[in-house]
Picture 1 (cartoon, helix red, strand yellow):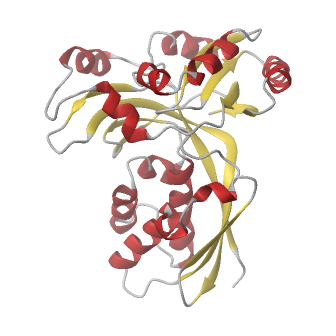
Picture 2 (picture 1 turned 90 degrees about the vertical axis):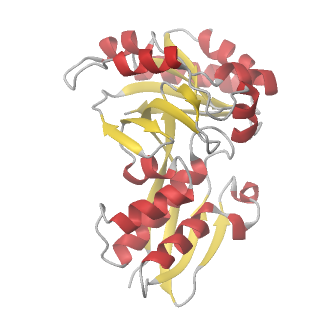
Length: 294
């Protein structure tokens, strides 16, 4: 059988509200999620044993492969599907790690999609979905890699139709631990932010026919609750946001997830391209991607 290939697209949180902290310690969230056109690439060569190799510009940043989410997801699916055919995964790591764009989660989701293809498992098979959920909070949304509203701890998904939005994504190549950012919020177990919950539940996003301008107006009224704690932990996040806000034509500037990746949305591809070139000249050590969200 030929090698199977999947792209693991970056996840971008256009909005992220923290609704409270559950008794089990997990945080309840509400987030409008889009996906970018930058991605890692994962291949699967069928073999008797499960294994993983890494390469690419970020390959050395993957850490201990035994703890990689690709391996974790595959093993969780093995536990649920008797006789699951596996093989050798090869990860071409392009996305920065610990960056708030779900790189590891997207890789794990790609692994599950590859194993599903190899074993003729349906996309909506409960065993596949459960393996995704148990692998990590962002893995279920990355499994489909389609724009949606994500609630709960990441397991409740409601699809939305977004227009193409030219964007620039920037990461200062400083990792931020998600747990540290949530800890900085200081919420106690069982603490509910009722006012935030009411705002999120009453919010109505534009319809499928809405223009990019209508979406930008709606998005401008929301925010990412993790920006402030992330900036406190890594002040460079504030520098990235300021640099993006200073770009000509930037319409919406925000941090994604728990950081440190930030993004700016533009009206045109030309504006986004010009901004990316300027940022790369001014900050040659930053990771900069120009493309589109959708």
